[in-house]
Length: 194
Image (cartoon, rainbow, N blue to C red; front, side, top):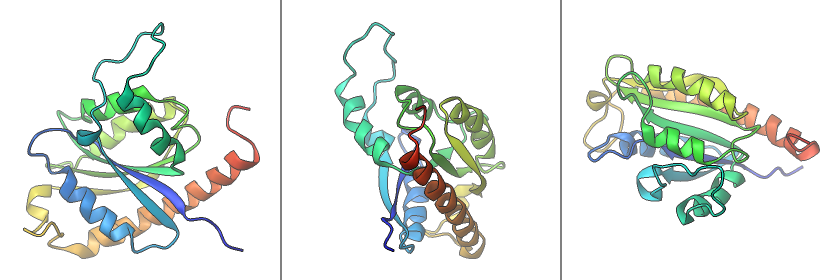
């Protein structure tokens, strides 16, 4: 029996000028594309241009950027958030993106690839878990994190010591595959919230 590959959206969470997020995301997607059970859609929040101000409940029309991104998120069976740690938490751009949507996240798994200084962005990940729970998503346990990320990659954007991070990426993708498959099956058999 042939099964369609899982559609995984990789969201680059930082929009800061000079950010390191694309280096980390590009490495991760390169590793992930070796799998044949997943297809990837890279969503760079710096290129999406979501409005920073959320609408009030009386607004009838969503901004065009919000409408344009919605089908890409809705099509995803799961997500990987590539996030830095800013001031012991995640970037505002990532929170804004989460808050613009609801049903697009529901009953879908999230994985995390984080980067930063001494904590490797893990404080960002721990702050994101309850936020995602509130939008009815689930987060998987294993992460990939880069402590002192700027020194861990070479001039070609490849990890200087790839064994550990490649192994962590495989573990993360294996868990994401399991959860995305299980939740896709569940959503197909019984739509979430029905």
